[in-house]
Amino acid sequence: MATHAGQAADAPAADTTAFDAVVVGAGFGGMYMLHRLRGMGLRVTVIEAADDVGGTWNWNRYPGARCDVESLEYSFSFSEELQQEWTWTERFASQPEILAYARHVADRFDLRRGIRFGTRVRSAHYDEAQAQWSITTDRGDALRARFCIMATGCLSLPRMPDFPGRDRFGGRLLHTATWPHEPVDFTGLRVGVIGTGSSGIQVIPMIARQAAHLHVFQRTPNFSLPSGNRPLAGDEVAQFKARYPEVREKARHAPAGIAGMPAPDRGALDDPEERRREVYEAAWRNGSTGLTRAYNNLLMDEAANATAAEFVREKIRSIVTDPAVAERLTPRDHFIGTKRICLDSGYFQTFNRPNVTLVSLRETPIESITEAGIRTSREEIPLDVIVFATGFDAITGALLDIDIRGRRGLPLAEKWRGGPRTYLGLMTAGFPNLFSITGPGSPSVLTNMITSIEQHVDWIARCIHDLAARGARSIEADPAAEDGWVAHVNAVADQTLFPRANSWYVGANLPGKPRVFMPYVGGLGVYRRRCDEVAERGYEGFILDAPAAAVA
Image (cartoon, helix red, strand yellow):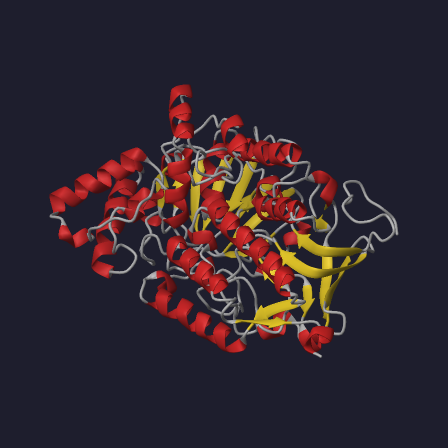
């Protein structure tokens, strides 16, 4: 079998196709999973499509890409030495700095030798007789492993709308999620950006500073809050690092996995209007997504939500000088926070620039892409570059992009035809020894992803250890427990305003995708306790299968 650069060195030389575990994806989830399993003495290889570690932070290199969790918390907690030696420079880290951090982690823990870069998994089929997964790749690899662990990420399969004529455009087509490694110079160019979700809101101000003219094609206006980003002072970082034990413990049990966002104890309507405005003003000035967590009922009560939404609408009207443009930028079709709340650095101010034009696709939809630009129902707009900021097939997309088949050859895509079904977001019935890191049915995208990743990886590592101690060869979700968890996830979501928005949380950004609220909205602390209780009760809700010899 041919070897590739970066191929794992953990397997015995006699057989480079057999592993205890194959991990798919070398983002933060895959890297930490490799570190934990290698520390347990297991033979592990990681398969990664990109040329380096970092996952979404390796692919999404567009100008302005930045995390919406404060950098001092958006980092691993498993190594005290790592926490102390790495120093963040900004309150909200930029993509280059986060990628540098991921590379530092890979170097520090010698992870690259366990990763096959430039390789995509094509299929993962379960062999019931052998209780093993057979994994194939686009490089011709045929691997076998007892455990298959999907660290494919929640936002990793880009969505590229198939507009008529797209492929005949004579200029340059870009997507924020597959940005070139080299910088793109927009100086003197006519640029169109399609999409005003998080990536669009981040990239638009950056392109506007360079482009001769920028047309922003907006289907749905989005709520966005000022990030309040700034450089971090050295003494501030030192003081925070000194409190890391306390901060990390608090984050592990906080609803959003963020120590700096504790659960509020009051509802929005408990305060008089004047006091409520002071709370919102303070949150607005402070930056971050904290405004949507200023009160405990903003995502559960329509009237409470309306107070925050109208506050932000007033801010938009006060920032954007043209009232007609301000109105087009003002969201009115969803409750604030029920779509991914965005953080920006001068997004609404960008529409005051003379070289920026907002095109409302509600009023003048795109009919086609031509050789020269974009044709709407009103006109043809000449462009040199078109940037798609159109998001992802979120949470389930990367999993279903692989041909995964469980017992009796059941395709995962068939099982999930009506929407994803998991137990705890960790496993799905009929697919033994197949784990998913931050999968559907877990808090994932509603939390600090690294905090959630550490919780999932630690649970999976403990489970694999316990299986060995029990002499069990496989574990899978019990169908009844899975049904109960799916019902619970839906019931908790239905107590909130989340399912009422046409968001990627419910798959509404993809035509034909089942409308199911995919994350668990109960909070990371509650979820963590549930997972721990399940393990402590002998993996309640899971089926453990002993070897045939042991059964006899």
